[in-house]
Amino acid sequence: MSKTATALFAACIAVLGMTAKVNAQQTAASGWISEQAAGYYRFKLGDLKVTVLSDGTVPRELDKIMSKPNEVREAFDAAHEHLPTDVSINCFLVDDGSNKILVDTGAGELFGPPSGALVANMAAAGYKPEDIDTILLTHIHGDHSGGLSVGGRRVFPNATVYVDKRDPAFWLSKAEEEKAPKALQTTFKQSQQTVNPYVEAGRLKTFDGVTEVLAGITTVPEHGHTPGLTGYLFESKGERLLVWGDIIHAAEIQFRDPTVTIQYDVNPSDAMASRERVLAQASKEGYLIGGAHISFPGLGHVRREVKNYSWAPLPYAVDLKTKH
Image (cartoon, rainbow, N blue to C red; front, side):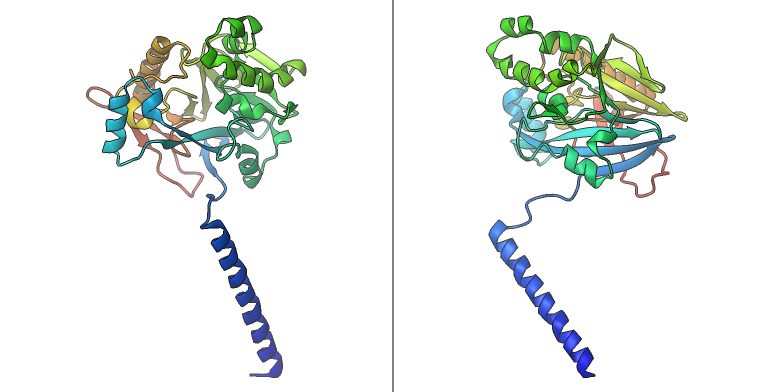
C-alpha cells in the first residue's frame, strides 16, 4: 500500500472512530433513539396527490373517557395493547396541481410533545405553510384546529379556512362559553386563541351542511361530536376518499360497537347516530377512508360484519400509481 493510500486509510479510520464515539456518547446521553422518522405517507387518488401528515400522537386513558370502560379495556386486552395508549393525530394534504388543500392542522402548541409535528413533517414532505391556500377543518377542537395559529400568529398566512357554520357559532361565541360547563372552558379558550386570527384577517369561510366547497370536494355532515363536525369527500377519476375527522377515536372498540361515545362529544346521542350512518355508508360504497385518530397513516376501508363493522387497513404501497 502506498504512503498516500495508507495515510488516507488511517484518516478514514480516525473519522469513523470519532463518529462512533460521538454516536455512543449521544446514545448514552439519550438512553436510546426517542423519535420516529419523518411522518408522512403519499398516495395517488385519481389525479390528486395526497400526503398524510402526522402531527404526532397524544397519550389517552381511553377507558376513563369513553362510555363503556369495561368493554374498552376488554377490547384493548384482546388486541394485546396497553392503556393508556398513544392516539394518532393525522392531517391530510391534497395537491391537485393548482390548489394545496390541508384537512385539519393538528394541535400546534396546545398539547406539547409528542404532538405539534405537522409543520416539520410538511417540510420533510416538501411543503411549506405558505404553500397552503385552503384549509378544510373537520371541526374546531384543539387537535384539529390548534395548529392554525401559534403565539397568536397565523401559521398558514395564505390560507382560507373552511368550516361548518355551527362550529364557530358555538366555539367562538362568548355567550355560549358563559353557558358551557367548566369542563369545556379550556376548549372555548383554545378555539378562540387559534381560530380568531383567521376571523380577524377575513380568512374564515363557513358553509351549511352538504356543500361542494371546491370542485370535486363535497362536505359530509357528521354533527354530534361537535355541532358542525364534517367529513370531506374527495373525488377524482372515479376514486373517492372520505376524510372523516372524529367519527372514530378508538378503532379497537368503536367499529365493533359504534354506540361507544367519548367524553369530548358535545352531543353523544347525535355523535353515535352520525357514526352509525357514516360507517354504514362507507361500508356500502367502499370508498377509501382517512381517519384522524386511526394509527398513522389512518388509511383503509370499512368492512361490514354480521352485526357490526371492522377496519381493513390500506396495504402499504411504494408505487403511487397503485389503485385504492
